Length: 327
Image (cartoon, rainbow, N blue to C red; front, side, top):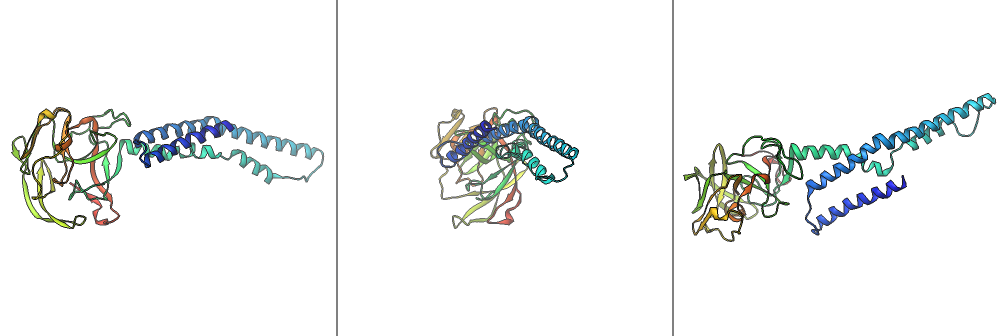
């Protein structure tokens, strides 16, 4: 038991050290991997508790009760009715023997909760926080959203291998994906191009396969953070109607595009960019068109990077009216 205490202390210290290093920026953390390891480790302790340690404690408690009963029987034969230490002392000692030690309480005791969180996050819904304004006006900074992990097909956690097909991604879907230049980071954008599409964003007008995407001008949008108004439009991609922002003061030219894979499928000019989306990839753009680092700059999103479909704002502590679904 003493050895198990030391081993558990080392394991817990390793987890705490990993989280601290991640928080301080010393390492690039991977929450999915951390949660998977926590589930495996606590699950191993839970099994050991259920099939090894708890039976041993119960056996020791039963041996204590048997010894106490045998002692009482011997005292009764000797005619002794009162002795120091009675039933209450035996009961207290039994409770101490059955009590789960701290190192099992912090491992096996946490397994059910960690396992439920792991399964929910991996296969059903995952929460995210919107950190930037690239999806304004659809999503605002500080929105806490839920992402559906099964709509596009279930994937194994950590290795991201798809195990079910699910529904195909549609133009206009708001999708969370692993950022291609740095897969440890999650991004959220709107799908504007499917595999094989010819997507063009020229003079701030979006066309797909040679057809301009329908837009309708709306009243200007007031950005409280920037303290200014922006031109606002309603855009329709497939069956999705959503709002976008455009800043006429910003140039149409795409500045700072990286040398991403399949860049030869894109043509840049002073008017903007046009790209042919390769098979198994998607072209993503933010709704805040002049304030979004998206596929125009870093390229296409491979299907294996897809995390899920964003569909619901479950909280915004600065604006409770934000709670609800969105397009």
